[in-house]
Length: 269
Image 1 (cartoon, rainbow, N blue to C red):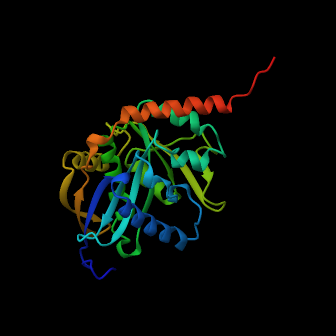
Image 2: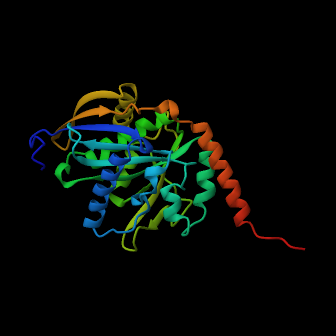
Image 3: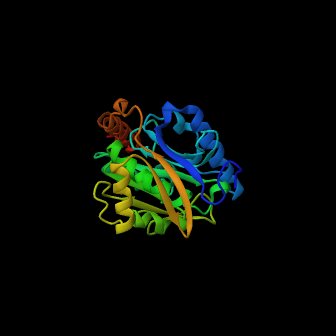
């Protein structure tokens, strides 16, 4: 573990921000995420592209040292209607175009996707790269105004996603699964349909997410598998008064209509 962390009970900050507000931090996020992916032999994954730094509809959560000098992990919430398609659309659209009208149906009421989840080896085993970042991502989605969330999950994160309220979307792919990002890796498409009520989440996760919504900036001692970590949550998103979900939905509708026209066959008499 990193020398700057207490080896018995690490203490870190988990905070949220809009990507366009902190390009330098986003660059560090990309560096850490890329290192983790390449270490397991993955070199092509849509959620690791860098265009999202400039996307006004992307929100980032990082776990960092208290002095802010090192990032130990993170995840992102992409909102449909930004300057690029959702990562799940980019990843699966050529394999099953049904993902496009599905996202559009949900996007009319505000939808997004949790993606790019990672953690470094220094903090492995404490739940950072799994449940604590996922809880926070679902919690901030309420601030953003989203009603639903997509996810493309690796096998080891499917059960975790179910715990916070996701269900497998079996109408696309092979009963919801795709070989992605390479042929020997399986990804599962999932949807959380009710961000507000979390009716499908288990009781423990629902309670934890609601507590984070009610206390966005709080210090909590968390435990997972007999390991303890102190997390300084700072998930009240700065500058949120500059965010306009309604306009983002309008932009998504314009893009969708243009795509329909471009993709429709010509009927020449």
